[in-house]
Structure formats: structure tokens, C-alpha cells
Length: 624
Figure (cartoon, rainbow, N blue to C red):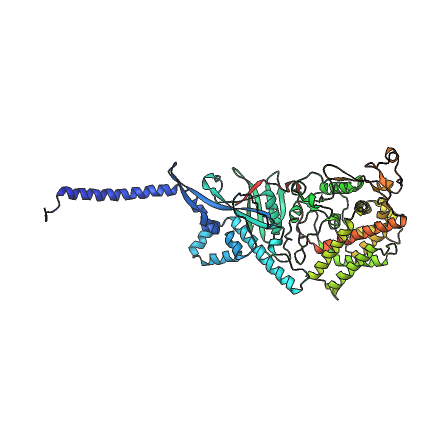
């Protein structure tokens, strides 16, 4: 009835319901807490650890297990041309890092300065918390790559505008090498128990290439003990094996980094240089297929590519060139001299490597493919070029042939670009373009057919003569009679007593080395035949037999009119023509070597550690 007070039972029931609700609430919260606590690893995918990549972190409820699973995205990093549309993660977009704001948004990365600004906005407590949970090192790596592209592009524009050339530098899309990123979704359920933070993924070959691009040089690369350490340009990269996962690397920024003139040339060929493999001017388009250059090979079958990453590999390269056993052994035996002003391996590099410099570009740095340092403090390549030009003009045995005239014309163009004060030569876009054009001209000459065979013969003879003069005491005595020029001058080149080492080296080259090379080079060309593999087989005569070989074919090949693989053809030159031809080739090779070394550069701390078998390696490695 209206106005009646509630009975005692109703009051008791209401109180009981209230008590039950109060008791239920903590139970509900406890249950929710248990469910959310099942999302293991969610706190470790925090923005303070992963940066902008943390925005993709989410909890997914698994009804079959009545728990939450943590899913997150991390980058897969690799190197490829910007026009490449195939990545290691299927059906995911490929983002190429170019330093622009759009690229930073796509790759969820920032410039290092932007990270500093973000940290400055945090409270003191948050900054301490950030220090306790420092960012994943791959976040720092992505920022470093963005900085490299951003700073180097700005420097390139300033460098070109200071003194423009005929061709502007390549745009980013026209480069043949860039760092690419794809996202990959992972679950914390599959994380090894030893890992406390999400990791990025790459491969061993891409990590080695990435280190070179950033200017980081390997100090230790021990696969037996799984110890890896690289330093350079303000970065430190260390690696070791982690149980349940594999090879894990940590990338740290130690000091200031600089990406200006020292930035590595953004060319796809740089990838081979990182492993001590050098594509040469004789490399044809068909030689650049995956199974020839992009993957390891034990011993090069021809001169399409050479290996310089260890003394054994240099010896194999000289064997392919055709050098005799004594010459090859100089690189395999201890206490043998293999350097004059600079190591002979850089002479091989300058004479054979293709030109990597890009038209209109100011970048000239390359990874060192050799085991020896490139230290220019004790000599000057510009003085060496001047000494070469003087000897080319003065040497009466050098005929003023069409090729020699081309070289002199190139030297004149280089001299004009150097300006009125050549002692203070600064590399400018026009000067680098002139050097590049000079190299293009020499390549057209050296790769001509059938001249290529004689080029191989001169190369072989040149390195045999140089290394014999450096090491053979009998050769020293022999040449002491040559106008007071003793081969001990080679020894003096490495000491402090000789003022003009460059002129002395060219004197040795033109007065002692060149005549020997011309004398020992092949007199006629063997018929070449093609193997099914595509390798050209060229029987190379010994230096002693070269001058005495018969000019006519004999045996069954001559009788039936056929030409066997070991038969020889007349060169078509008389003795004088032959000497002029070989002199032209030798002068062109020496000129090319100097110009190539002027147009390209190596960091003095960069030394190759043998790892050519890792070229193209898809061994997965992880960056924490």
C-alpha cells in the first residue's frame, strides 16, 4: 500500500545486493587485470622504445585461449635500386629512405635532431624513464640513414651550384643504390625469452653493405668466434650470437656524424666492393646476372670481375690475368714487397675497375676492397699525373700516335680545369667530369676487339715486371746501369729522403718497366673459342716464349685449313707497329690508373677483412 515503509526483508535484500556488487567489482577488475596482464610484452613496445613504430602495437584477444596476444610491426631493412618493386615481405609496400619529410613519415623515423627535441619536451621524470628504457638501436639506425640522405643531398646541391657542370647530378630515383624498408607484423608470443625489445630484420650481406654506406669500417669480423665490431663516422656496430635467435647486432651513435664529401657513392656496384669483389671495364651486361656477380664464386673465370679481398684472392686474380707462378707467390709468401708509393693492389684497381663516379656528382668515396690501407699523406696523385705528362712528352720511344694524342688532349683538358694554381687543386664538378670523360675514352680504347687480347698481355707483363723489380735483387743489379737508375729507387720511394717521389716513380716506370713490358708482351693473338659457360679461353704464352713463337700454324690444323683453339694468328703489325701498339696500351693503362684513383677515394681507416663468400648471403641477422 501507498505510504507503507519497506519491509525488513526488502532492506536486507537491498543491502545484500549492494554488498554483492561491491564484492563483484574488485573481482571484475581483477579479472580484467588478469586478461590485460596476459598481453605480455605490450609495455616493451612503448613509443619510448620503438618511436613511431609503437603506433602499430595492438592487443588481439584469443578466445580459444582466453588471453590477449600482443602484435606489433618492425622494419625489414635491405638495399636495392629505388625502382625495385620486389621486397622480402610479400604484398607489403616498399619505402625508400631519401631524407624527405614524406619518407620519414612512411618509415616512421625522424632525424636525430628531431629525437633530441622530443626528449627536451619530456619532464625530468620521463627523461629518466627514457634513459632506463633506451630506444631500440634500429630506431637510431633508421634516423642515421635519414640523416645521411638529408645531409648528403643538401651538400650535393651546394657543391654543384658552387661550380656547375654540363650535367646535373642524378635525382634520387635515378640512383642504383638506396636503403629500403618494409613493415613486418610480429607477435610477442614468438619472441625468444632472451629478447627484451622488438628487433628489426635484415640479412648478413645487407648489413655489411649498410655499414659501408654509413661509413662504418669493420675492425673485427670473426665468424669462428661470432665476434663482430665495426666503427666509423661516429657509429659503433657490434654483433654476437644470441641463443634461440641467431646473429644479433646493436647499432649505437657515439659522436657526431658527417655525410658530405665523404658519403659513399650511391651506386649498386658498391655492393660488390664491400666484399672485395670488383667489377671491371671488361664486365658485359650478361655478366651482371644474379648467378655471376651477385652471388659468391670461388675463383673468377675471366676478368669480368676480380677479387682483391685477401692475399689469396689477389693471387687468384693475377693467375686469371695470366701472371707466372713467381709473381703470384709474391702475394702468398711472407716478407715480400708489394708496394712502392702505394700498394700494387690499388694499381690493379685503378687499371681494371669500372668507373663508379656519377656524372655531375661530388661523391667519390668507396669501400676499400683490398686488405691494404689507402694513405695519401706520403705522395700526391696530382704530382704523379704531372710527372706522367712530362714523361709522355719527353720520352722519344713513345710515338705520337692517335691514342697518345687522345691522352695528351685529355691531359690538356684536365690542366685547364685545374686552373692557374694547380698546386692548390680542388675537386670541382667540371674537373671531376673531365676525369670521368678521360676514363670513358680509355675504356673505349682498352675494351676494343681484338685489342683486348693485347691489353691482357700488357697487364700480365706489367705486374710481372713491377713485382719482380720490387723483390728480385738480380733485377736491381741489372738496372743500376741504366743512366744511374738503380732499382733501389723503388725502396727509396717509401722513405722520407726523396723529395719528388712521383717524378722518380714515373722515371722508373718509363725507363725500366715500360721497355720490359713491351719486350715480354705477346707477339700475336691466339684464336679464341667460346665455352658453353660463356668464358673466353685464351692460351697465354710465357714471357720467354713470347718473343720466339712461330708466326705460322703447324700440324693438322694448318694442313686441313682449320684453326684450332691453340693455334695463333699473325698480329698484322711489323716490329715497330707492334711496339707502338703495346706502348699505347701501356701508357693508356697507367693514365687510367692515375685518373681512376683521382676520381675515387677510400677512407684511410677502411681495410677489407676477407668475406667475399658472403656476397649475396641471405643469412638472417637481427638488429635490437
